Image (cartoon, rainbow, N blue to C red; front, side):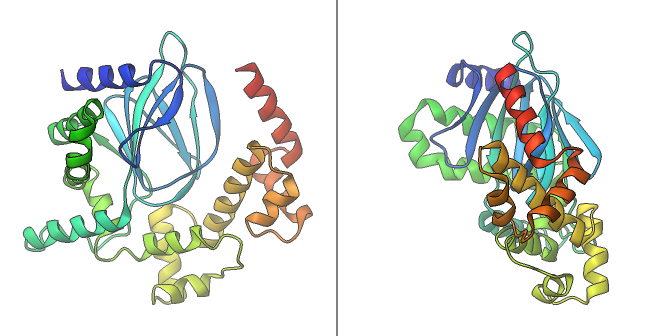
Length: 296
């Protein structure tokens, strides 16, 4: 019944296709009625919960397809491909995206570890890149209580941050909790490195720079980074740059400007690497994307 209530809330607040920000900062609702192939994207730390239909995220060739039985946790900024290959008017994709505010997640993670006497610590492994988790009672009720606030501006203003904290807690204590606690708790060096990279894409950052940033040797950093993201540090940086550039090109930015914005000093090198990854030159990819958008 709770999932039906959440679905009804989303349908009521978003009767037509689109992605909208709600009055709750960091909470967005979406409805998709057209099939869309997976395209380059950059996921920030988020939880994505689906109430109808299915969504797909691809990280380094691994496909994560999920619907109303599982929610997706992305505990760190990641270069992915995302799409809605099965969405239609008859079977729309309905869902909600909740941004995870890193400072609040870190504080809550530390509180949980302290309250549990260290039993909830996850220091032995690197954070998982993407995780699917079952909708348990705690998560379902927390999400319903959060979205219920959309119907009452006073409740939203007074209780909004508390309800977000309740949802964060449900995620940390749920099936994907270990991955979340590793990303936001003690030993979160890889997640911190990715935060650093995300704001320095236009700079020439080396593996040694990244390792020094978190006080690790090059070898240990390389191993832990690949364990966490499935990619080597250099592969990750390249994917982040290409995905960000592809998103800028899709928005209409000239290819040369998009390449420069993400740290490429050579347009020809950018075009070669773009074609190697996406199978088309940046201009041809942009042209085909425009045709697809017009067709939709």
